[in-house]
Image (cartoon, rainbow, N blue to C red; front, side, top):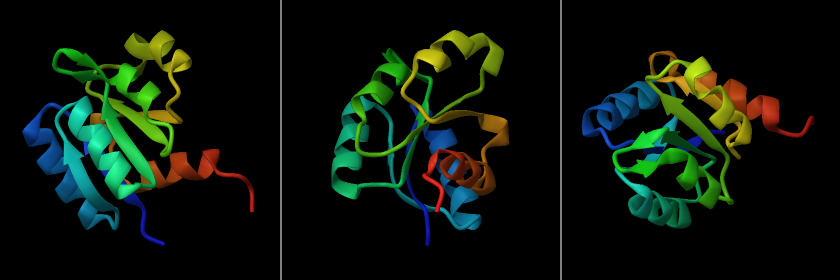
Length: 119
């Protein structure tokens, strides 16, 4: 089964490169979004298997957006070091965190599998 993904990042360059990378690795990127409004619209209409949300969305907080997404698992992404975000990540509803330089289809699949019920 192909994983359906929405990418949320305020950087058009990152969205495009992440979409190419993940598509090449078998992840179906069904939408991209630059802000919370676009992201919530995409999630509502696409019903993705996972939503990748940048920690910082310009003037918005990716953590605030993650708290508003209830129908799909969220993975936070950032170019910041995980230790710089540790406290925020613990309090986040996200299922995990990926540094942007470690983003891959395998990493996403791994995080989804560790949070799925055994079966």
